[in-house]
Image (cartoon, rainbow, N blue to C red):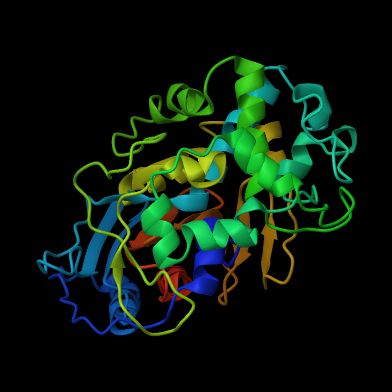
Length: 379
């Protein structure tokens, strides 16, 4: 699945493709049902990813594994309990809250952005009266993606820029202004383009409807009810909660070069598009509950699973913060992937919520999470 947050997508175009440091594999058990997945995980480390943590759940059966290292300096291994930045997986949480609000009759997916954020999209060719909440959630709004702005790339995705600005406090208003300085990508509803700005606006609508920070609504409505003890919306807190591994990036356009520790940063730069932290067990629990109908009524879950063609992503459709992907063996998995500096993650589950997989790579310039998903569900 290639619909990454632009904090991942942009980084993916900037960051290089190899890591020379050696990696150590963690010992594993003898569960042969996951031999293909185990091999795919080790292939990530062989390709240069510092370390991998993965958890699969199939019915009552849980399987966990790690490979590689969580700290290049000390050689400490990754842990199956690691907490990590989940990037665009945050989008599914934001969409879930908005759909809960719709189920409560507090908004409609067909409400315009203008209704909830009057005047916000009234500049440079934008018209908030023609962009709906649904268009934000399925990326058909045409609103420019702020993390593909050249100045943002120079400031946050290159070595000199990142280390000078990684703790900057950028408000949602300032991020939106960067996006709106660019003309729309297309007329609302006429095409598809992945844009983090859509979920910046979606989070602001949550706040306007509820009168509370969007992160507080996620905590009240999803994290607390599901007892997701490893999941948080960190706001401006730069450090990862423990247990966690270090996160690494190249911070350059070259495909080779030094590897940098990019663990600490102000995640509010990603706001509603990619701010959250979680762990593999929690992500499995969240998507299993979501697809199993524990978080949304049937009508809202149906809306969430109604997809549009996701650009040139093969065998995939984008719903409302949720990707439907058809694997090579014909199995459909639902979920999202996500990336942010030093972190690449994916979490998916079958439509019945029975079989799920969540994993994280603590490097953002190489690796193939698709291969691990294929191995788990297709063998």
